[in-house]
Image (cartoon, rainbow, N blue to C red):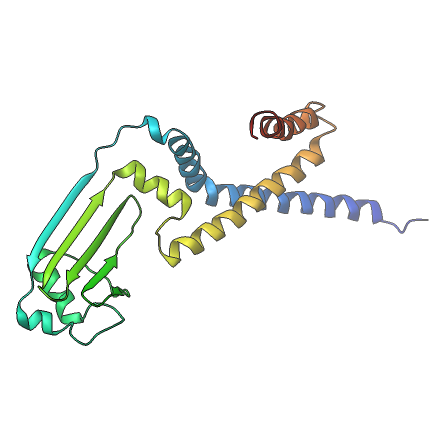
Length: 209
C-alpha cells in the first residue's frame, strides 16, 4: 500500500516542477527577446544582401610624417605603432588607432583595421614617411549583419553571443518540454513539430547539392 499522502505529495511535486519549467521558459524568452528579433531581422538582410542598396562612405587621409615622427619607427620590426605617433594621429586627424600589431616590411608598414560594417587600413612608407589611411563605412545594415556573424567584433561580443546561444537552448528545450506535457490536450502538437523538422530537411536534400 502507498503511504498516506503519497498521491498528494506527487501532485504537489508535479505542480512545482511545472511552475519551475514555466519560469525557466519565460525568463529565458525575456532575456532572448531583443537578441532573437535582431537575429531574425539580420537573417533576412543577410539573405538579401545583394538586393539591399548601399552607398559606402570612404574617408582618405594622406600625410607625410616629419623626420622626428619617422624616427620613431626606425629600427622596429614588429609590434604596434608607437604611442607618440598614435597620439599625434588622434590630436591632428582624429584617427583612433588601436594598439594592434602591424605588418612590418623593409620599406613599409601596414596595419589592417577591420571592423563591423566596414573596413580600414593604414600604411606608412618607412623611407619617405608617406602615410596613407583609408576608412570605409558600409552603413547600419552592414554593421548589424556583421554583429550577426560576429565578424570583426570584440571578445565581449563573442561572449555575449555564446551566452545568448545558451539562453536560446534553454528557451527551446523548455518549450519542447512544455509541448510534451500538454501534447495530449493538443493533438496537432507533434504534427506541427514534425513539419518544422521535415521542411528544412527536405529543402536541404532536394535543393542544396
